Image 1 (cartoon, helix red, strand yellow):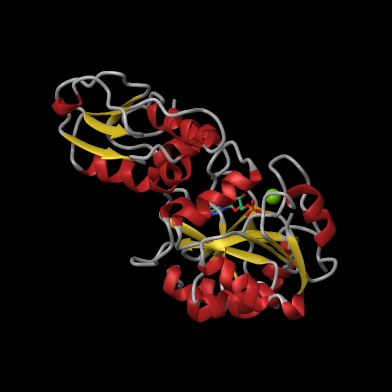
Image 2 (cartoon, rainbow, N blue to C red):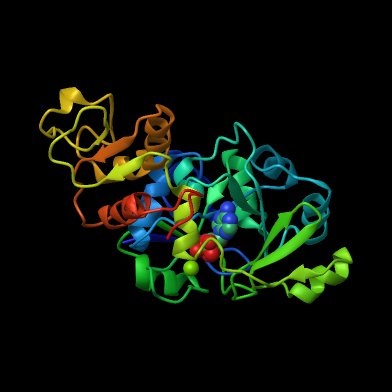
Length: 324
Ligand code: AMP
Ligand code: MG
């Protein structure tokens, strides 16, 4: 059962757990977050596992301040102005991912953009002490409503996490507003704790509300993530010229014929496989092979999200790379 520690005695325990790659429930002004070190793939995989999420969506990276945010994302005039006006606070900014951001591919679900937020209080300080961003979706099982108190987190996730930091009831009780900065334009991806009108007033710019769901729409996801190569799932034998994305200790027949092979987890550890998924798909794709054969991957636990992602990569596409 999770230990519940009051906010003013939890810092060292939370830090120790995060450094060890654990996940910890933390208070923010919006809702409680399930936080892990966003630069540690194993920790990020644990977040998805604990929540029982059936697919890998990109997570918000919570930072200690603008300086840390600017090492992770590329900030231009507008995004800097937004951060200065609304941070710390319930505003998440989606900006291009910086080269050498250090953030793990699984935390951004393989995208070349990143969602960043500086929350108020404990969680920002925790990120600063750790020296890394914290990936933190809401601290609830997939499909349940977000938790706004520590006992609510305990009732839902208490048997799956080591620590809940109790900061009392959250002030806002709503998720953060997500805005994507596109050059000189702002787009609302999710309404939340800060009204779009407030952002418009502060920036003197309209916030576009169209096509808000771009990342969540499965069709669009395919075009973001799809490798250039064809992807063949559940391969039990390898055809000449294929690259092989392997899993576990047992090889598909004629694996020696593969142009190149990467193993998501030689030991068959599904969490390790999740953390390697995006970078290995990208690495194999870079080899320029026509097709990537993927060995069968168990469907339970994190395997569900891994298989979901692979099925999208294998979905038929037109030549523009957009999902049909
Ligand atoms: P959660 O952390 O579960 O409250 O949700 C995070 C939200 O941020 C989801 O709706 C994501 O789709 C969205 N999000 C995170 N990263 C990005 C990104 N790079 N581009 C667009 N939306 C994002
Ligand atoms: Mg949520």
